[in-house]
Length: 434
Image 1 (cartoon, rainbow, N blue to C red):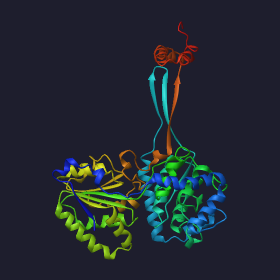
Image 2: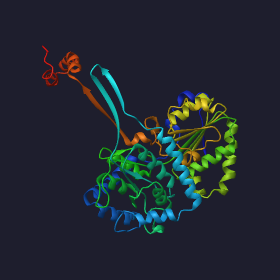
Image 3: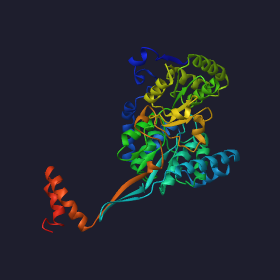
Image 4: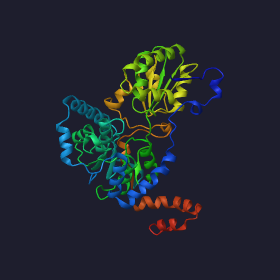
């Protein structure tokens, strides 16, 4: 079922893993052309456009996209106690990790009488997108909201696709998670029209400064198209897992983790890299054994068949190079020296160390954030964090003597760049004979 790639021997030097290893073949650029007119419609017609698009695409027609506060309260009241306890624990652990990311103002005395302070200031308002297509994701509410709250954002809006089965509102578990976090501004809008609503503002929803959260290709395309009008976290697309394993790994665990990631989406990508051919055979058998009891078998089989792979390498050092090149959203390292290898990883959204740190833990309760870069963008982009909602602002304060001491250097630099007015703006304050 899962394709195999042999990168041992001569293939080791002649093949770039990025050129041969599979990923979901989705074109965000092509999707941008599809969402562009939709976004323009929302810009021009506001709430009416959002309503019409939602009725056409989701089969839901509500007078207002805003979810009544009473519906959020009802969802909290109806929440299963076991799920409530799990969400509260997830909130507590995620908050604990993200509070450690808080930034503090730093003042540097550059010269006598001259200092620069870097202030960390939260954005004023954010729009947080929570997916709701094949699956409802209350955990994504936690992952988006907690870092924004820790950063000090005071105006937080959440949107999630409407569900016809829930009176045209987002999934009850999503609403309940919002309620547990104290979020009462919630919208039943999905896909690209939700991003456009946040970017341009409508009669129902005030525009925001930053939009975060994962979604389908059209959400990613809308974020790319509207970037600049809004800040974004990343173009998070179909989910993916990379696993680097050796002979010490339990094939049952590896098969379960591959299936778990494929369960998200038929466009999910799963990669297992090892130096042990026998392990690949064992995992193949385990996948076949576990599939019959998998609830979403068709979706899983599609993902594992279309854009997933087993990769055989000469040794684990080469394997580490392969997973670094692939730059997975989630990377598990299950080897005898897993921790040491984990700290050598340069390109991954998040790294899961050892047999008892599966990606599923990170999805819900590790305390880490599960909104992570996909499609190889982990080479240049990190996951969602408190920093995603902060801006560094420099405050510069020099006295007259410090400016006078700096003036000769500004004379030279301004002269070299042929910007005499820059020099004059300093010299009007501290003339050369002063």
